[in-house]
Image (cartoon, rainbow over all chains, first blue to last red; front, top):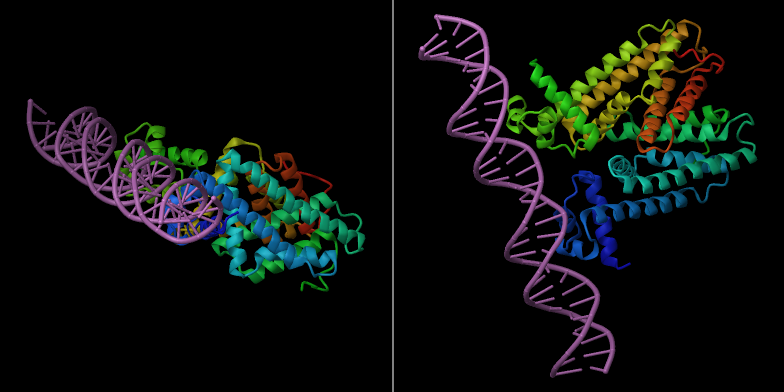
Length: 198
Length: 198
DNA sequence: GCTCTGACTGACTAGTCAGTCAGTTGCGCA
DNA sequence: TGCGCAACTGACTGACTAGTCAGTCAGAGC
C-alpha cells in the first residue's frame, strides 16, 4: 500500500474520532491529510469505501497495539487484566481507538455490509478474552466451576458498557478500572488480592 | 402540548429508529408525520431542536413503560430482574427504545448540550437500579458483603454492553437474558435457583 | 531530450437539505 | 357576516457536499 493511502486512512481516523463517522466530510479529510479531495477519490471509489477501509485500518492497528501491550506479561491472568483495562485507560490514543470502534459499531446498525465486519472483529476480541481465561484456568488462577463462555461474554459486555460511560464522562478512568478488576474477580472466582497488572 | 406536536415527535422517533439520528431528514419526518416540512419549523426552531425534544420525549415514555412493567411485581429482587431484562427482550418496541437511547448516547459524544441530558437520564436509570438493590438487600435477597455502588454500576454496564451486541445481532435475546440473570446472581451473591421474573 | 505514466490538483456540476416566507384555510368569537 | 388568529402549506433559496474531469507535473525508461 502506498504511503499516501495510509496517510489518508490515518487522517480519516482522526476526523472520525473528532466529528463522528456521519460527520465525516471528504473535504475535512482532505484538509487533514493535506491533499486535494480529488485525491481521496483517486484512492477510494466512494466516501463509504473510505470509511470502511478506515475502520478496517483502525481495527488492525488496535489489535497490534493490544497485542504489544500484553506481550511481556508472564501470566495469562495478568494478560487478561491488562487487555480488559486497555480501553479504560486515560491514554488519548485508546480513547480515539475506542471511539472509532463505537462509531463503527453504531454505523453497522444501519449498514449490513459494515455489520459483517463488526461481527467478525467483535468475535475475535471475544475469542481472545476466552482464550486468556482458559489459559488462566490451566494456570490455576480461575476457579473450576466458572462457565468460561458466560464469564467471557459478561466481561466483554462490562468493558463495552463502561467504555460507553467513559466516552460521555459519567465515570472516571480510575473508577472504570476498579470496576473492571472487580468484575474479573467476580466472574472468575478469585479474590482481589494481587493486582498484578503491569 | 398540542397533539400535532406529539405526533411529530413520535414520527421523529420512528425515523431515528429506522435511519439513525444523523440520518434523520426533516423531509422524511414530515412525510412520516403526514405534514409539510415547514410545519416542523413551525413547532421546532431547528433540526437540532427537534432531535433533542424527540430524545427527551422517548426518554420520558421509556421511563413510563419501564415503571409500568415492574409495578405489579411483589419483591424488589423480582423488579430488579425484570427491569434489567426489559431491553434484552425481543419486543420490537423495546428495541426501538433501546436503539433511540444508543443514538442519543452516541450523539452526545459530539454534542455537549445533549451530553448533559444523557448524563441526567443515565444517572436516573442507575439510581433506579441502585434503589432496587438496596430494597432487595432489606428483603434479605442480597448478601451482606456486596458493595452496592459497584454492583449497580457493573450491572448497568453489562446490560448496556449486551444491548449493543443485540443491536448488531452477535447474540440472541435468550442468551442476553440468561447472561443478565447470571450477572445479577453473581453480583448480588444469590444462587440462580428461582427465576421469579414474571 | 523525448515520451509515457502515475500521482495529484482546481474548478466544476448535480444534487441534497435545512430553513424561510408569502399566502391559505378553518375556526372561534363579536 | 366578517374579523383575527393559530395552524398549516408550497414554492423557493442559499449553503453545502460527493463525485467528476480536464489538465499539470515530476520522474522513470529509452
